[in-house]
Length: 450
Image (cartoon, rainbow, N blue to C red; front, side, top):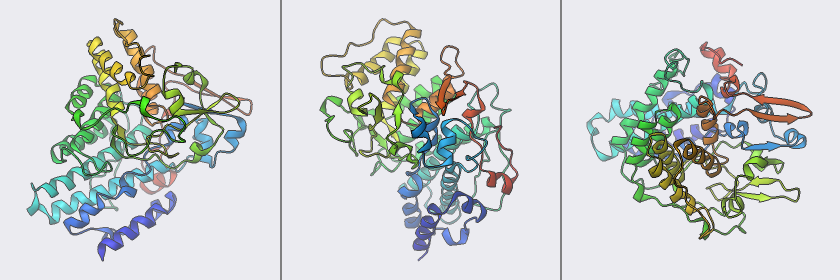
């Protein structure tokens, strides 16, 4: 009976507004799963852990643009104000905060129940797998949160900058202050490194984390921290032979969604939060980005459709539909490995991974491999291809945040809406979203600067 109560509560939580969730905290006695079967079922709940990965950062990035009419047609204050980086109104309850702290809450329930009631099974395959999943989910949730609600990581300042409240128990009455940014990242890394040793080599389903998926996320986190040595170390540990790049020559550009799900590049299934801007036909890819794709580059026709006015809409999700992919895929790892090797002075080896990827993206026989470039030239090519390959994913928002720290890679984004100019400067507070007002009122934690 309890598992049915649990599933019912999960349904209620995911159909309740963010404000209601904050004001009416869940009754823990109703949701605690008791058996290993219950815990296994909870850690396999796609609606909780895979759906609604961060999406608002796609709207605030420089991948897209719209017209005055398109901006007016955005479906909520959150979308309209996020597009122009105006966080003073309409973004008081950004849904990603609520969604990812729900994941933290359920992960903590699993971890506590394992420790309190199933310690006799410690070391067994099922115990390790369930604990590894919970640690992975908690770490991914916190990384999602820190990428939106805290300043970009800089090692010299991270100990003095505010991070997140680090909730390590499902006790809903316990108050948590905001930890430092350094402590927040260390919390994420410790969870993931522990999960690596507990998770199976191969998961049964793409919605489940495996050892390689945890290693891939570790490489993404370390890349965001600017620790290219550790990012490379973890990406090289991934079981690459378990995955395979798609050859875009085999895809049909006449299909509405040419890249189907499932496909062999996807390592971990995730769907970005259901903002409706992706359904707005007046949301376009920025022309200067489209111009970077050559006529031989198959991504131009597979990722985008051109309208009669010469503007391009995105359709290249790895989910085979209009929902935006929010998981982890092999192409991202090729680009991480390539970038880290170039930054570590192994330029030709780094370019070899870039070339291997791009040979699958260009029309057969048309691609000319990169070779003989300086470190700076190679890094520019890798970062350019990273943007083109991972377009319309949350990774662009992550890249803007980290690369703005590097002279020569800063980006100023400019938008025009109703004859008014808006700018997102490289070190602007616009790279940090406000914490929901109800959370501030309930807990008294410090708000981010607007």
